[in-house]
Amino acid sequence: MINSLLFAIQPFVYVLIGIVVAAIIIVAVLLILKSKKAKQEDDVVEPIKVEESKEEEFVPVEEEAEEEDDEEDEEEELTLKESIEKASHSETKTEIHKQFIRDYLRKRFNDEVIVNERENYTSTGLPLADTHYVNKGHIKKCFVYVYETEGTTLLLINADHHLSHELHQEGKLVNKSLFPKSKDQWYSLPIDSKYTNEDIEYILDYCYFLPLGVRVVRDSAKKAKGEVTLKESLAIAKESSVNDIFNKKFVVDHLEEKYGEEVIVNERANFTSTGLPLADTHYVNKGDVKKCFIYVYEVDGTLLLLGNADNKLMKELKDEGKVVNKSLFPKSKDTWLSIPIDSKYTSRDVRYIVDYCYGLQLGEKTEKEVEHTHQAHHLKDVEVKEKVTVAEAEDLIGDEVVKEAIHEEFVKSIGGKKTIINIDIISENFNSGDKVTIKEMKEKGLIQSKFDSVKVLARGVLDKKLTIVADDFSDDAIKMIVATGGEVIELKQKK
Image 1: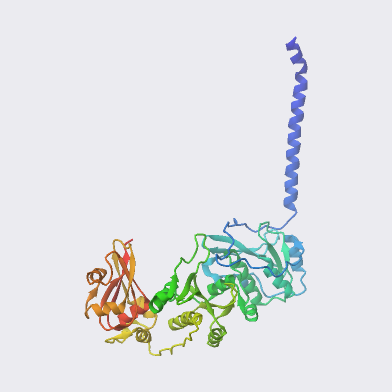
Image 2: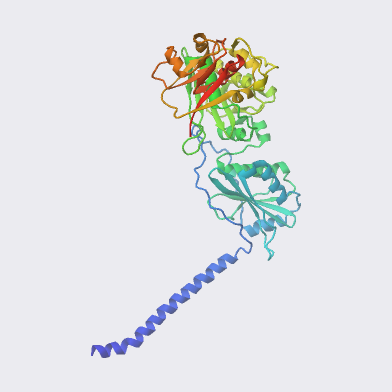
């Protein structure tokens, strides 16, 4: 009986299975048609995409988040088709085109940008963009699409509402862009006759630096405003001409040599573990005064000083044609100046700025020394003296000689406890022609036996021709040794 029942319902089971299979096929077909329809909504070629970097948002570790003063402008959001149509109907065409942008990016950023050149149209007549990428450190990110259609250039830029607001204020065309789909905000800019070459260069710089955590300030805005945030100060320093003579160590050496215990030197790395800029912070430590007077950043080969100073120093530097702005960081009732140390600065200038900021906290006036006009700029040109002071060595020898004068000696290991010794102490305890090592210094009781490395600092007078072997030297100590005909040997660990 059971077999008869199963036999009777068997046709119905087959029919039911057929219905389920047909339903699955119909749903699959509908999904495919829907997908094709969505893809056809934009009948232009979509430029290649790059995986978005997951870098942390740049917020300098010492600066509080800035208040956003300018409200975001209400903007129509455009698709790519709408952006291209709007560009093609711009009343006035422009001479700024793809090649102009390629040339500028290559000249401005060299291999720190990937320039992706493409034709204006595909073989089927669809618009095709150049796509350009930041290529710095671990960051590989697209920041601009460049279309060229019917004589007009269209930029799609990865930007923020600060730039959008600025362009709106100048009466330029700008809209939010729905393309490319991204968690970042993209904007559509049809480049008409209102845009100058300088405008485009500024926009490209702004969009390039934004993924690196830096907001670029237009030069004219800086002059009008006269005040810059820490982010803006760092951006200006990065764009300055590189002056690799100066670094954090140069400032530390000067402070230790000149002020000793009357300054608290707070040395730190250039960046945090997450890549954020980190400053050395130095403090007056004299009498009742315990006060920070300078922040020292080192960014991309340029030194940035934030000095607790006054309008007098600012005017003095500006009159000399140097870049200086009032700094909004740190927030304080005092006047802080932002000073990127570019190629216009000499070592005497840097020391003067540091001394000026130090003395101001104590109510002391700092006078600038007169620059010497007959310095040796090569080791072979140094005029050897029987004895020199720190100031005389500075007059005789230019900063370029320092690196040239150092001879390296490689040893198996360097480490342990480090101490310092002033060069006038060495001069008093050795004879002309001696070779001075840490071993001889210990034997004469000049440094304690517990120390394994030593740094030589400039002070007083050196009146001997000495060969000095040490782990580290200040620049002025090197100049004194060279000025008296001696030799500098710096210990380095074998790799």
